[in-house]
Length: 313
Length: 237
Ligand SMILES: Cc1cc2nc3c(=O)[nH]c(=O)nc-3n(C[C@H](O)[C@H](O)[C@H](O)COP(=O)(O)OP(=O)(O)OC[C@H]3O[C@@H](n4cnc5c(N)ncnc54)[C@H](O)[C@@H]3O)c2cc1C
Image (cartoon, rainbow over the protein chains, first blue to last red):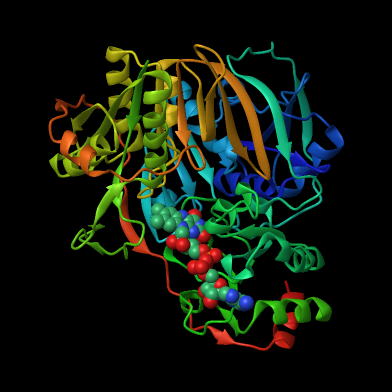
């Protein structure tokens, strides 16, 4: 089975979610099948060839890269390339762009699409994948029957094995595609670990009282190489930017370590973080619901505990 | 200007999910307008006064979803459409919406970025592609800068991007596009007399069926530790 995996690079590296998607593709294709990675926004061969580390045979890139991340253009490129290279399974790591693009690709390719996939396909039952539903509270299985298949996969669902294989980079000359949408501006916090990509996350809630108290959270995050997150009331009050808000109406994350500080653990908050591998809660209220779903807890005042923790790290 | 808002009818976000006979146990479950769809509806209602728009709210569902549609009318939609079918599959739902939109020509189609039951997040893209118009998601703001020109922001990893485009298009909405609206007494009264039309669904082949539902395994009990122990724990990651 031939897989096409849509990847991105960041800071001269294959993004971890992309690396995982390539590895996923390798498991789908088996040892003999071909895994092709596709990077639309960069054609830096020295970075792209490292896709081989995760199991790609070949990496495709554009002679004139598409940097704008336009939804319609991306869907068109991916579909054209999927057709040209006769890809059977198109795998997209979940990102803001890929989530928006996947259904358009599926319509163009007359493929079935399954989003939010959390495991490898089970081939004994046709092509059956497990996906996360009810916002992290449950799973269900879906069997795809179309000849071409599109999957968007959740992060941190496989443990990736790395080799030192290099992939062949092939540069494609495809005529530019126009779009009806104009990109005016892109604002992105620089030099910070991106929340959806992060292995570790330090998150603060209303218990921190105000934006002026985030210094200790930032320090902790920096010391341990974590991204920062927050609860909804915190972003609603503009203490923190909206893209840091996790939960039912915010970003859903699945890091290896989630540290929640001054967050009560409302069901809507848990919806966004419950698939974290290890959850640590710091809260002054021993009755806070978050302790019921945490692995480790400290009952106490964040304003004493966090500075002390920082001094120990 | 004609706006179509597509809403899902989903369990309240505090629902304890349980399954019986490989289906959601709806016993005692309260159903609501999907929270993201609620943002889309609120934005459409804001545009009613701002752009003199008419708002049609649409749901693909069985008769039990009508109270949810009535609530949308109470919030401010002008008319409601129920396409009579079980919304089992995102593609199936999108085909119904696209077909309806083709016949009725909307300037703007709004919906939530995803439904909070199956979390597909696919319908906006499907509908955009089926109609051959742009689709954006997750859309955080939407502002008219010309008669038919809109400036929209879309959330991306670690930030947002600002886009400009012309009507018509589809947007999958999220906060802070508008403030959630609560129906007032007058809204509830007038909703009773607003039209709610039921139309039949068209058939779609090869739908995907969710089965073998299971709950996420519970975590073992929380271990209480000291700050020193936490520091040691963190170093292991
Ligand atoms: C439809 C819907 C969708 C929602 N979506 C989301 C979502 O996506 N994400 C989300 O987070 N919420 C969401 N919410 C809101 C959610 O219900 C809660 O209101 C919210 O998560 C509470 O945020 P919090 O824990 O920061 O604040 P609070 O509930 O106020 O909790 C503050 C906590 O801080 C503790 N505390 C106070 N002082 C200290 C101190 N000095 N040291 C240590 N601990 C301290 C308190 O004991 C308390 O537990 C949603 C709600 C609805 C209805």
